[in-house]
Amino acid sequence: MIFRLKAEATELVTIMTRVEKRLLILWCALAFVVWNGVYDMRMHDTVRGYLLDTALAQGGGSRGVDMRVVLHRGQVDAIAFSTAWALGVFLAGIVTMWTYRTHIRQTDA
Image 1: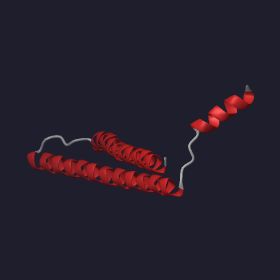
Image 2: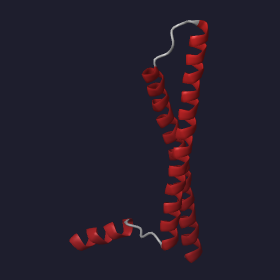
Image 3: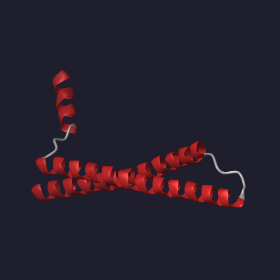
Image 4: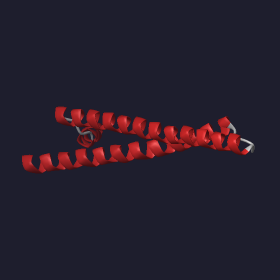
């Protein structure tokens, strides 16, 4: 009974080849680069919007916007958008690896 369970468990575990490991590393690196790029763009837009609102408030004599509130809202927005884009890229990588694995196994069989 124990040997049967052990055999079934080893069948479920799939060993990654060298190519699959490299693909996984490349897709993780690409997702990281996408996360950083999207985060930087969203924070840049937030800071630019804050500076524009502050300049308009000074010119019109009205009350300005609070820096902490605007930057915190922008940071939350940047984290959400960058995470969504990075997860999308990573998911594309996983699907690519899965397709590669099934294609290789079909040609080997």
